[in-house]
Amino acid sequence: MSAVLEVSGVSKRFGAFRALTDVTFDVREGETLGLIGPNGAGKTTLFNIITGFLRPDAGGLHYGGEAIDHLSPERRVSRGMVRTFQKSMVFPELTVRENIAMAARQRAGVGLRWGGAQRRLGAAEARVHQLIGDSGLRRSGGERMSDLSYGEQRIVDLLISLALEPRLLLLDEPTAGLAQEEAERLLQIVRHHDARTSVVLIAHDIDIVFGACDRIAVLNLGQVLCCGTPEVVRADASVRAAYLGALADS
Image 1 (cartoon, helix red, strand yellow):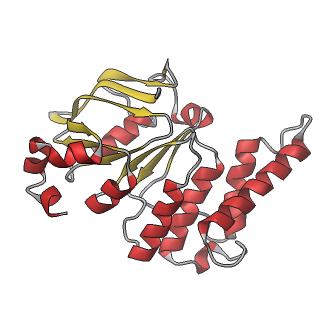
Image 2 (image 1 turned 90 degrees about the vertical axis):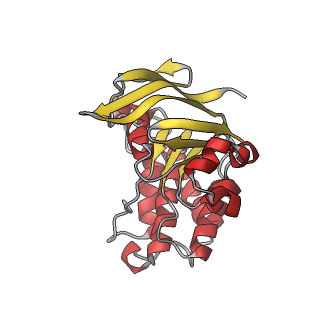
């Protein structure tokens, strides 16, 4: 299975503080990779480097086999790298359908004045209908975002990202603050994403990560302790020590 993203020897300092040290791992085509670690382990810093909001001090990234360290966040998005944030990014005054449709139309290039615009518009609308139908959201998507629960808004955040048809989807704590039923529904959507989409999932809930991910990378003090299948990670002595037995009890 080929790698969509390769992180090679990435290091980052903020003054005297070492946020990341020689971080190396890959994300394979179509897999869901969990990224876990205690608070301050470097997970968000790593996401910011992958998405172009920070530059590494050492090491580099390859995406689709090409070096991308010089690319802006916008250029990375245009190449199919999409990230969600811990805070909901929806437009509360618009409906569910309108929020998702904006992303679908952006992906389809609707509005540009060249042939095939009507066909692309039809494909975008079909994509919106499919995403809403598959999500289990109530009714037809005509509700204003401000009328939805926080958990439902987070699900719409995910649908907006999927409407962009990402090659690599980076999810930053997507289930934080969600009720169990809402978290399970969101993870169900992640599990049934397009087989061509690779996912990197940050979450503090160990049960969520071990249940949803094909492989897991464990960060601690800015370094990768272990990267492998859930079974390999669960059995790793260094991971057990860093988590003070949390894995053994989960």
